[in-house]
Image (tube, rainbow, N blue to C red):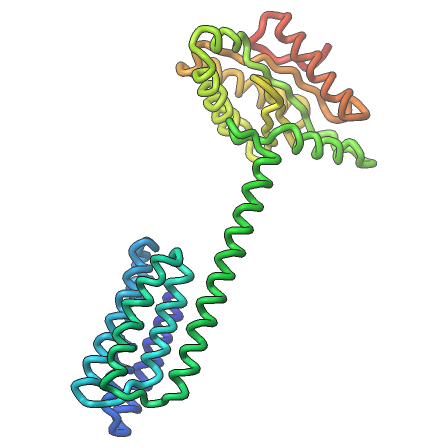
Length: 319
């Protein structure tokens, strides 16, 4: 944006110089004003203002330039040039792109109404351009509204896709994604030897719901999900398998590395003071230990229960 507005400022400055040399002061003053506006926008873009500040500021500057132009033309009894209509179209297009229709129409009214009123006592320099400009304004309205519809449709589709694959409480994946991932990996001819599957279950979680209620239980699940996301390495697939049970897929981890990663998570949960003393039990299995998904999950699950039977708060990797 900075480069574009800087180029526009230089271009308008060049046109202003030519206009003054050709003894066309009105055109020169308008071009000079546009150059100043573009230069100001360039500085604002360089300062990296927030969009909530930059958007209305840009529209205010362009609208102010149109108003100033109308005053200058009225004092000099000059016709309204087509560039003013272009500025109106620019404000309308930007407003419709950046804001909802109701807000955009207010900006359009602010810039177009003075031009329409000025037309009662000042002629237009190019009447055909007025007709073409009106048609272009309608086209801008149609295109921007169509664009908004596409954006809303895309956002709705993405939201629905998220609902299909994400757990609504924790934001982790639900069962669908890990099942698809593991099925694909198990179906490969040369199955990777550095993929581990881990089932984690919160020990005595039922006591939280019974003692403090399900709302507190939900808060604990959200906190635990955050701990898992922070503690497991980047690229790990995290899934809420069901209830207080989580499934983890560790990629690029040999069995010793996977054990170390799980132990680190168990220790991190132990140290949390906001989880009411809860701990994790875990059962892990390597992808190459079984031939299909059902057996792989069953193996990790059996090791999880072996960890619980051995006293909880630990991980089991062998039966």
